[in-house]
Length: 255
Ligand SMILES: C[S@@+](CC[C@H](N)C(=O)[O-])C[C@H]1O[C@@H](n2cnc3c(N)ncnc32)[C@H](O)[C@@H]1O
Image (cartoon, rainbow, N blue to C red; front, top):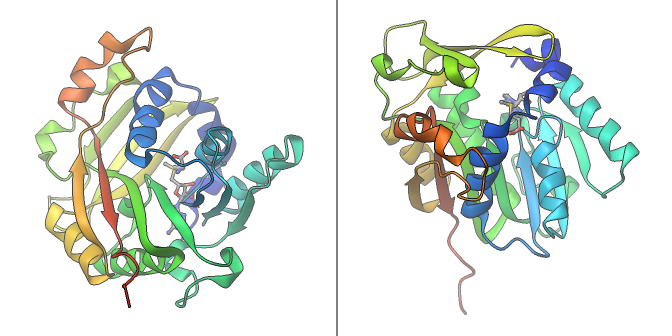
Protein backbone atom coordinates (compact mmCIF):
# COMPACT_ATOMS: atom_id res chain seq x y z
CA UNK A 1 0.00 0.00 0.00
CA UNK A 2 1.46 3.35 -1.02
CA UNK A 3 2.00 5.64 1.96
CA UNK A 4 0.13 8.66 0.57
CA UNK A 5 0.52 10.52 3.86
CA UNK A 6 4.28 10.74 3.25
CA UNK A 7 3.60 13.63 0.88
CA UNK A 8 1.86 15.85 3.45
CA UNK A 9 2.67 14.45 6.90
CA UNK A 10 3.65 17.78 8.49
CA UNK A 11 0.63 19.62 7.08
CA UNK A 12 -1.73 16.84 8.18
CA UNK A 13 -0.20 17.11 11.65
CA UNK A 14 -1.07 20.84 11.72
CA UNK A 15 -4.69 20.07 10.79
CA UNK A 16 -5.04 18.13 14.07
CA UNK A 17 -5.11 21.51 15.83
CA UNK A 18 -8.67 22.15 14.55
CA UNK A 19 -11.31 22.68 17.27
CA UNK A 20 -13.55 20.08 15.62
CA UNK A 21 -10.95 17.43 16.36
CA UNK A 22 -10.95 18.16 20.07
CA UNK A 23 -14.68 18.78 20.45
CA UNK A 24 -15.89 15.78 18.43
CA UNK A 25 -13.11 13.40 17.39
CA UNK A 26 -11.19 13.14 20.68
CA UNK A 27 -14.37 13.35 22.74
CA UNK A 28 -16.03 10.49 20.80
CA UNK A 29 -12.92 8.31 20.90
CA UNK A 30 -12.54 8.82 24.64
CA UNK A 31 -16.21 7.97 25.27
CA UNK A 32 -15.93 4.79 23.20
CA UNK A 33 -12.72 3.69 24.94
CA UNK A 34 -13.99 4.40 28.46
CA UNK A 35 -11.63 3.80 31.37
CA UNK A 36 -8.16 3.14 29.96
CA UNK A 37 -6.12 3.65 33.13
CA UNK A 38 -3.26 1.16 33.18
CA UNK A 39 -4.41 -0.45 29.90
CA UNK A 40 -2.30 -1.46 26.90
CA UNK A 41 -3.42 0.26 23.69
CA UNK A 42 -2.39 -0.51 20.12
CA UNK A 43 -2.86 2.62 17.97
CA UNK A 44 -3.32 1.29 14.45
CA UNK A 45 -2.77 3.94 11.75
CA UNK A 46 -1.43 6.18 14.52
CA UNK A 47 -0.30 9.00 12.23
CA UNK A 48 1.93 11.39 14.17
CA UNK A 49 0.82 9.87 17.49
CA UNK A 50 -1.72 12.59 18.30
CA UNK A 51 -4.14 10.20 20.03
CA UNK A 52 -1.39 7.97 21.47
CA UNK A 53 0.03 10.93 23.37
CA UNK A 54 -3.41 12.05 24.52
CA UNK A 55 -4.26 8.57 25.77
CA UNK A 56 -0.95 8.25 27.59
CA UNK A 57 -1.79 11.53 29.34
CA UNK A 58 -5.19 10.01 30.26
CA UNK A 59 -3.43 7.21 32.13
CA UNK A 60 -2.89 4.36 29.63
CA UNK A 61 -0.25 1.93 30.86
CA UNK A 62 1.43 1.11 27.55
CA UNK A 63 0.92 2.26 23.95
CA UNK A 64 2.37 1.08 20.66
CA UNK A 65 1.65 2.88 17.40
CA UNK A 66 1.90 1.56 13.86
CA UNK A 67 1.51 3.46 10.60
CA UNK A 68 2.28 2.70 6.97
CA UNK A 69 3.70 6.19 6.43
CA UNK A 70 7.38 6.57 7.29
CA UNK A 71 6.96 10.36 7.40
CA UNK A 72 4.13 10.09 9.95
CA UNK A 73 6.19 7.70 12.09
CA UNK A 74 9.15 10.10 11.88
CA UNK A 75 6.93 12.91 13.27
CA UNK A 76 5.63 10.61 16.02
CA UNK A 77 9.18 9.66 17.01
CA UNK A 78 10.28 13.31 16.96
CA UNK A 79 7.51 14.13 19.44
CA UNK A 80 8.51 11.11 21.52
CA UNK A 81 12.13 12.24 21.71
CA UNK A 82 11.07 15.83 22.54
CA UNK A 83 8.74 14.62 25.31
CA UNK A 84 9.40 10.96 26.14
CA UNK A 85 6.25 9.09 27.15
CA UNK A 86 7.47 5.56 26.48
CA UNK A 87 5.38 5.12 23.31
CA UNK A 88 6.94 2.84 20.69
CA UNK A 89 6.25 3.53 16.99
CA UNK A 90 6.76 1.17 14.05
CA UNK A 91 6.37 1.76 10.34
CA UNK A 92 4.24 -1.08 8.97
CA UNK A 93 0.99 -1.55 7.06
CA UNK A 94 -1.58 -2.99 9.46
CA UNK A 95 -2.50 -5.71 6.97
CA UNK A 96 1.18 -6.76 6.94
CA UNK A 97 1.53 -7.13 10.71
CA UNK A 98 2.70 -10.62 11.71
CA UNK A 99 -0.02 -13.23 11.32
CA UNK A 100 0.51 -14.67 14.77
CA UNK A 101 0.03 -12.66 17.97
CA UNK A 102 2.63 -9.94 17.77
CA UNK A 103 5.25 -10.60 20.42
CA UNK A 104 7.28 -7.73 18.94
CA UNK A 105 4.48 -5.30 19.68
CA UNK A 106 4.29 -6.07 23.37
CA UNK A 107 4.18 -9.35 25.23
CA UNK A 108 0.75 -10.36 26.46
CA UNK A 109 -1.31 -8.46 23.93
CA UNK A 110 -3.35 -5.30 24.13
CA UNK A 111 -6.56 -4.39 25.94
CA UNK A 112 -7.62 -1.98 23.20
CA UNK A 113 -6.98 -1.35 19.55
CA UNK A 114 -7.66 2.21 18.46
CA UNK A 115 -8.15 2.48 14.69
CA UNK A 116 -9.09 6.13 14.11
CA UNK A 117 -9.70 6.64 10.36
CA UNK A 118 -7.88 3.47 9.35
CA UNK A 119 -10.13 0.67 8.07
CA UNK A 120 -11.55 2.71 5.16
CA UNK A 121 -8.03 2.94 3.68
CA UNK A 122 -8.34 -0.71 2.70
CA UNK A 123 -8.63 -0.61 -1.09
CA UNK A 124 -10.46 -3.96 -1.26
CA UNK A 125 -12.59 -6.21 0.94
CA UNK A 126 -9.68 -8.67 1.02
CA UNK A 127 -7.35 -6.05 2.52
CA UNK A 128 -10.09 -4.95 4.93
CA UNK A 129 -10.41 -8.56 6.08
CA UNK A 130 -6.64 -8.87 6.56
CA UNK A 131 -6.56 -5.63 8.58
CA UNK A 132 -9.33 -6.89 10.88
CA UNK A 133 -7.57 -10.23 11.31
CA UNK A 134 -4.25 -8.63 12.22
CA UNK A 135 -5.95 -6.24 14.67
CA UNK A 136 -7.69 -9.19 16.35
CA UNK A 137 -4.26 -10.83 16.70
CA UNK A 138 -2.81 -8.03 18.81
CA UNK A 139 -5.71 -8.02 21.29
CA UNK A 140 -6.02 -10.05 24.48
CA UNK A 141 -9.09 -12.28 24.87
CA UNK A 142 -11.90 -9.90 25.75
CA UNK A 143 -10.01 -7.00 24.10
CA UNK A 144 -11.89 -4.20 22.38
CA UNK A 145 -11.54 -2.47 19.03
CA UNK A 146 -12.55 1.20 18.81
CA UNK A 147 -12.62 2.57 15.28
CA UNK A 148 -13.78 5.62 13.36
CA UNK A 149 -14.75 4.63 9.83
CA UNK A 150 -16.43 6.16 6.77
CA UNK A 151 -20.12 6.53 7.53
CA UNK A 152 -21.68 3.64 5.57
CA UNK A 153 -25.17 5.13 5.92
CA UNK A 154 -24.42 8.20 3.80
CA UNK A 155 -25.61 8.31 0.24
CA UNK A 156 -23.32 10.02 -2.27
CA UNK A 157 -25.68 13.02 -2.15
CA UNK A 158 -24.97 13.32 1.58
CA UNK A 159 -21.29 14.11 0.85
CA UNK A 160 -22.05 17.83 0.88
CA UNK A 161 -21.97 20.74 3.25
CA UNK A 162 -18.55 20.21 4.80
CA UNK A 163 -16.89 23.36 3.40
CA UNK A 164 -17.85 25.13 6.61
CA UNK A 165 -15.72 22.59 8.45
CA UNK A 166 -12.73 23.02 6.16
CA UNK A 167 -12.97 20.02 3.85
CA UNK A 168 -14.71 18.59 0.86
CA UNK A 169 -15.83 14.99 0.31
CA UNK A 170 -16.89 13.57 -3.06
CA UNK A 171 -17.49 10.15 -4.58
CA UNK A 172 -15.12 9.67 -7.50
CA UNK A 173 -16.64 6.36 -8.57
CA UNK A 174 -20.22 5.11 -8.66
CA UNK A 175 -21.24 3.74 -5.27
CA UNK A 176 -20.25 0.08 -4.81
CA UNK A 177 -18.26 -1.88 -2.25
CA UNK A 178 -14.70 -0.53 -2.31
CA UNK A 179 -15.61 2.52 -4.39
CA UNK A 180 -13.37 5.54 -4.00
CA UNK A 181 -14.19 8.66 -2.02
CA UNK A 182 -11.93 11.74 -2.27
CA UNK A 183 -11.25 14.24 0.50
CA UNK A 184 -9.70 17.66 -0.09
CA UNK A 185 -8.71 19.93 2.76
CA UNK A 186 -6.53 22.90 3.38
CA UNK A 187 -3.93 21.80 5.89
CA UNK A 188 -0.98 23.92 6.89
CA UNK A 189 0.39 25.47 3.72
CA UNK A 190 -1.15 23.21 1.12
CA UNK A 191 -4.32 21.66 -0.19
CA UNK A 192 -4.12 17.96 0.58
CA UNK A 193 -6.11 15.27 -1.13
CA UNK A 194 -6.49 11.63 -0.23
CA UNK A 195 -8.82 8.79 -1.08
CA UNK A 196 -10.74 6.49 1.19
CA UNK A 197 -12.92 3.54 0.22
CA UNK A 198 -16.62 2.99 0.82
CA UNK A 199 -17.82 -0.18 2.56
CA UNK A 200 -21.33 -1.04 3.68
CA UNK A 201 -22.15 -1.87 7.28
CA UNK A 202 -22.46 -5.47 6.17
CA UNK A 203 -18.85 -5.59 4.84
CA UNK A 204 -17.43 -4.12 8.03
CA UNK A 205 -19.49 -6.42 10.22
CA UNK A 206 -18.75 -9.55 8.17
CA UNK A 207 -14.99 -8.95 8.07
CA UNK A 208 -14.95 -8.25 11.83
CA UNK A 209 -16.97 -11.39 12.57
CA UNK A 210 -14.69 -13.47 10.32
CA UNK A 211 -11.71 -12.13 12.32
CA UNK A 212 -13.31 -13.40 15.54
CA UNK A 213 -14.96 -10.21 16.82
CA UNK A 214 -18.44 -10.05 18.30
CA UNK A 215 -20.53 -7.39 20.09
CA UNK A 216 -20.17 -5.23 16.98
CA UNK A 217 -21.83 -1.85 17.46
CA UNK A 218 -22.13 1.43 15.56
CA UNK A 219 -22.03 4.80 17.28
CA UNK A 220 -22.83 8.32 16.20
CA UNK A 221 -20.28 11.07 16.79
CA UNK A 222 -20.81 13.16 19.89
CA UNK A 223 -19.70 16.66 20.80
CA UNK A 224 -18.13 17.60 24.09
CA UNK A 225 -20.93 19.55 25.77
CA UNK A 226 -18.30 21.69 27.51
CA UNK A 227 -16.72 22.84 24.22
CA UNK A 228 -17.08 26.61 23.66
CA UNK A 229 -18.33 26.04 20.14
CA UNK A 230 -20.46 22.92 20.84
CA UNK A 231 -23.48 24.47 19.11
CA UNK A 232 -21.57 25.09 15.87
CA UNK A 233 -21.47 21.38 15.02
CA UNK A 234 -25.19 20.60 14.72
CA UNK A 235 -25.06 20.12 10.93
CA UNK A 236 -21.93 18.02 11.17
CA UNK A 237 -23.50 15.73 13.74
CA UNK A 238 -26.69 15.44 11.71
CA UNK A 239 -24.71 14.25 8.68
CA UNK A 240 -21.50 12.78 10.14
CA UNK A 241 -18.81 11.82 7.59
CA UNK A 242 -17.61 9.01 9.87
CA UNK A 243 -19.17 6.80 12.54
CA UNK A 244 -17.74 5.03 15.56
CA UNK A 245 -17.47 1.26 15.28
CA UNK A 246 -16.65 -0.99 18.23
CA UNK A 247 -16.19 -4.75 18.52
CA UNK A 248 -14.85 -7.18 21.09
CA UNK A 249 -13.05 -10.48 21.14
CA UNK A 250 -14.63 -13.19 23.24
CA UNK A 251 -13.28 -13.27 26.80
CA UNK A 252 -11.07 -15.88 28.44
CA UNK A 253 -12.68 -19.36 28.49
CA UNK A 254 -13.33 -20.63 32.01
CA UNK A 255 -11.88 -24.11 32.62
C1 LIG B 1 -6.51 10.29 8.66
S1 LIG B 1 -4.96 9.71 9.24
C2 LIG B 1 -5.36 9.39 10.96
C3 LIG B 1 -4.16 9.30 11.84
C4 LIG B 1 -4.49 9.04 13.31
N1 LIG B 1 -5.22 7.81 13.50
C5 LIG B 1 -5.28 10.19 13.87
O1 LIG B 1 -6.49 10.06 14.07
O2 LIG B 1 -4.65 11.24 14.10
C6 LIG B 1 -4.87 8.08 8.58
C7 LIG B 1 -3.57 7.38 8.88
O3 LIG B 1 -3.69 6.02 8.51
C8 LIG B 1 -2.46 5.61 7.94
N2 LIG B 1 -2.72 4.41 7.12
C9 LIG B 1 -3.44 4.32 5.97
N3 LIG B 1 -3.46 3.06 5.54
C10 LIG B 1 -2.76 2.33 6.45
C11 LIG B 1 -2.42 0.95 6.56
N4 LIG B 1 -2.82 0.08 5.63
N5 LIG B 1 -1.68 0.54 7.62
C12 LIG B 1 -1.26 1.43 8.56
N6 LIG B 1 -1.53 2.76 8.49
C13 LIG B 1 -2.29 3.20 7.46
C14 LIG B 1 -2.02 6.83 7.14
O4 LIG B 1 -0.64 6.78 6.81
C15 LIG B 1 -2.39 7.95 8.10
O5 LIG B 1 -1.33 8.27 8.97
